[in-house]
Image (cartoon, rainbow, N blue to C red; front, side):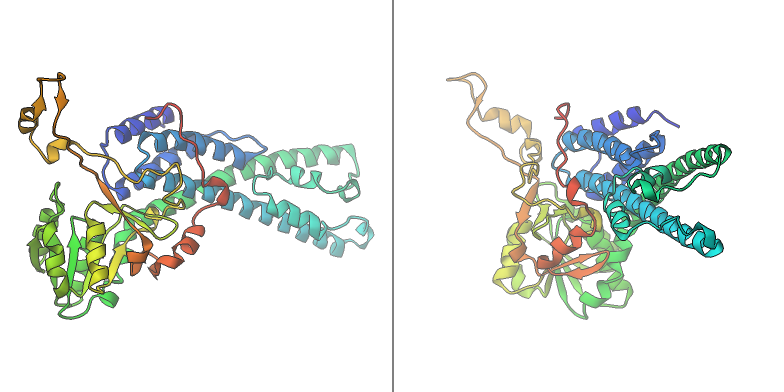
Length: 416
């Protein structure tokens, strides 16, 4: 097995240098790395879930600090923490239920053992509520009053019981790791197939002879539109080019290659063309807890144009893009600036430098933001791999994926 810390350091460097682009690739790599961390973690007999949570949090802090604006990293870290808590609670509840059933069965088999009481409902409820409780049978019994202890008939029986408890500890330790890893594998599979799940819904939203507008390039949007085409829907697509990176050129070429009627327009032509459009369909970088959207720069302008002309504004987003944080949270960075070279050649930029007053002091400044923030009031519908939802419902959907205890993850001091 490769050195886990080396894998973490390598991934941190890639995040800092922006070597991994796109929320899907970032989310998938993050989940795979955390799976390796969990697999390599040696957990104690007690506080097993806590040990896994501490290990994941320690790595998560480094990853989030490496690229705070890539919210998919924090999303996956929190999803994995939620998985650990859920699996630990499931095993704890199953252990308590099995113990109760065992006590009832013993009473039925031997009437002379009536002095062996069954766990009280209060004890069962208290143990079930504690997700970080040491999961072994011995520890569960420690919280029951003395009179509920199992009566030992002989010293040899006590030794046998001690060995059995030790075996239960080791078995449950392996069971917890196995269940968590299996759940993380399912998460990775969900991330990889989210495009397909979203594309299956295309025929319900795109109808015959409609005109669709999008901006830039999004694989989710591409698969969504092509899925509607495969269902014999005939429609036209307007693609705004998405300056300054012009990702819309790539999307327009791909759509035309797949047989869709495509028209490429400039970003400034969106307001001029929006009156001919039936629906706007775009991708997202992240969906915040309030239903707001972090999206490629220029989409807020498109959303305003759609609102002005009463055109539905539909956002496609996989569940790994659903962020449990709000835009005003201090740990959320809504934007980052890209290189000025995407707007201006360095040769032209140097000609605008003022060397007469202060050496190297520029008269021309270039600002190249990466993202826009689209408020929830401008979004008509979200389509995720779980179906279509209004922006007001997003916080309820997000609550199913995260634990409240894991919403705030500190940035490591070693991060950038």
